[in-house]
Every structure is written in C-alpha cells, then in structure tokens.
Image (cartoon, rainbow, N blue to C red; front, side, top):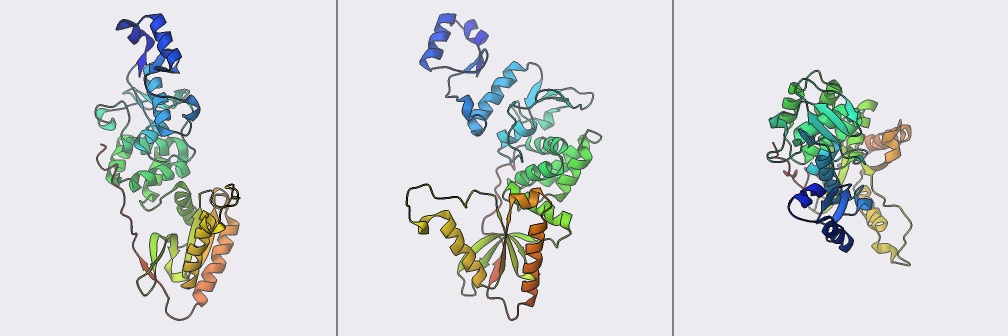
Length: 326
C-alpha cells in the first residue's frame, strides 16, 4: 500500500502511474492511494483480505499516531463482530490524556500505550480490541466478540488487565460485565446470544458442545446446548440451511437439510428431547423458544429408565490462534 506522492518520489511519472492503473498492475484503493495487489471495493464488505486492504489505506489517509481498532482490529485478529465490519474502517488516534467518543466517521481518540499495540503493527492487540468493542457495542455485541476471542485462545486475565487500565472510560462497566459473562464454548454469534438469553430468562445454565454417543461407543452428534437434568438439547440455526434447492433436481438425500434431519433423528432416538432455536428467538423476547423448552423439559422429566446415550466433553479443542498476540 502506498501513496501517489511516494510513487512520484521514487521516480514514477504521472503518465506511468496512470498506465499502470489502466493496465491493472496497480489498483486504486482510495483517492491517491494504490496497491499492486488485487483489490475489489465491492468485496471489501464481506471479504476479509479486501477489507483489511481498505483499512490499511485509511491508515495512510489518517496521519498521526493511529492504529486499527475496535471492529476493524477485530477483523485483523479474525474475531467475530455481531453486526459485521463497519463500512469505514475504525481507527484510534493516540491521546494520552483520556478516552473520548468517536470524533469522526470511525475515528476514536484515546490512550493507546505500547502494550495495547501489536509489536511492529499499527493495530490494537486482541485484548484491547475486545474491550473497545464491548465498550462501544454494549453487552450483546461485547459478549459475541469476547467469546469469539476466548474461543480463539485469548487469556481472560489479559482482558481484565485492559479493563483495569481503562477504568473510568465510557462504556467500561458494560464491557466488564460482558467479559465476566463470557466463556470459550460458544462457536458462533448466535450461540453467544443464546447464552445471554438463557441468563436473562433465568434458565438453568446449559452445557455446550457436548458429544452424544451410544452405549456401544458410536458417535452420534455434537450438540450446541444440553440440559442433562431435563434430557434436552437445544440446537441453534444460525446458518441458512432451510432453503429451496436451486441445483436443478439434485438428490434430496445429499442436501444439508437431509443430513440435518438424519442427525436430529439419531439424537431423538436416544431419548433426548431436541428443540430448535433461531435468530428471531434470541434477538427478541424469545417467548416461543421459552415455551418450546418448557415443554421439552417437562417431557424430559417424565422420562423413565436409564438414558440410551452418553454425553462427553467436546471432541474439538479450543483453538489457540490468539494465545500469543500480546
């Protein structure tokens, strides 16, 4: 990523620059800023590499002691953000005398000490990123980002260190609450929101990502949430599984819907109750989901005899990709 004036300074002429742009050897990312890598601005909203190129370009535009921060730093660390990446990449300009709110589109002003920066990079550390996102996005958004980071191997103690250093900043109380609630077992935003929904509804705490096995030692499924005392499983559909097949007559037995049906049948055959939840359940009051769970809990309590299944700890370990980012 480089400025037009940098290209001119090393000997390129205006006509040469235009010829390179016309030939596609260089790509304009922002006005006066180019890259010799492929860049498609139409993809920057959903393609992480393209988005980070646009963020690097904004770093060149915003001069001074600035770093990628908040949701854009989350994209750099590959940590989830509830509402996705902002169109205008977010930066923080270092100001040692206290944190303020956003001063312009995507530009914050706050202390950014060296221990909150990635070594050799103009980007906030994962722990500072989580705290900043939780301060700005509130409990729901903060929990999604915090749980994604913990799932990636970030140590909770590092989050509390940042919280202590940022005491008194806007939104810090809510950020601390999000960090205290977070754990590493949610694998998606919808699962994080489901955990929060369960807490808000006063439900017993479920276990997450348990494996269901037959007594003969056959693996049956890994499930999102389990209430063992009620013999009930909750599966959250955050993916677009249930859509009409557009493949022009493909065998229905090869579709994701068919495999999901078989998986659910295997779980039900063990005697476990299976309840499905959706985005609309956890982004609203969720009364319908609460009623479905209540009925399943009642059926589970009426079940007699020994369970025809075994529950085991997750089969996949927590990824450690963020363990050494500080």
